[in-house]
Image (cartoon, rainbow, N blue to C red; front, side, top):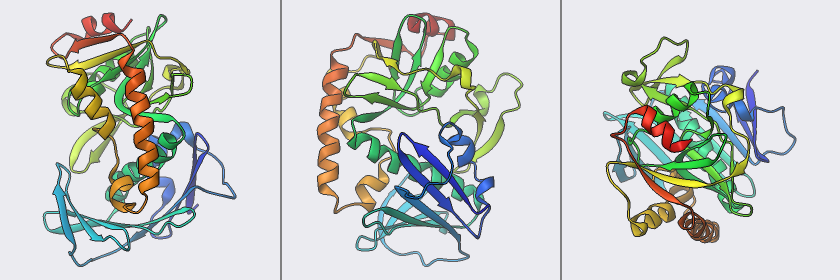
Length: 311
């Protein structure tokens, strides 16, 4: 097998490689909920190739906790990932009518992480355009209500999600990429990659250990019976040390803080109309969320207290 397929709410993806074994890519575990059979027409095709060296060049964009990112060429729409002066991966977007992306990478570990970001970004653009808006948040359902738990990276959403999985009272829509349908204001399941740190791993499990850009985490599989069914959103919680003002919340939602939007804004600079439509939908999203009952959920609360708030 040299290709794998996914269908994410009618967005069809094909990943193909002759240099690596696609069946070994961790993305299969990450997107198990969306695996599908081969399609005659794909919205996104990703070709994965290996390379031994690549000239470091281009405009410096910024340094993240993961690596340094450079824009090689706006005309060719390329990005290069560098860590400790070593080129890890190069992504080139050759899209015209359909999205065709080539990923050159040093090894399978780099492929796994780049694919996760790339697919989530391309899928996210499609969903945002169609009114299924992404929010960087945990979302869950109890017998009484469905809730969004919003928080910045590192605020403890994955830790809370892990506790929700162990509770008989809850199911989960998503650990970190919540989808809200603007039309009916319902939450939609998007159960991909629940990754927790070693410090959180307090119970013996068979969950797979993996390296997330040089940071050790544990991949927790969400059992099918714990995946929440589509339902109306009832409450909005902010998880952090203190409450968040309406203005700051609106700004973060409009900018998509915490979401994977590298490809929307860097590889597609000529796609202004698409970006405008997404922004308009984000304004609608802010309007919907501003009308929900909103509460502060302190990260200083113990797990039992947090779960009681969400019931």
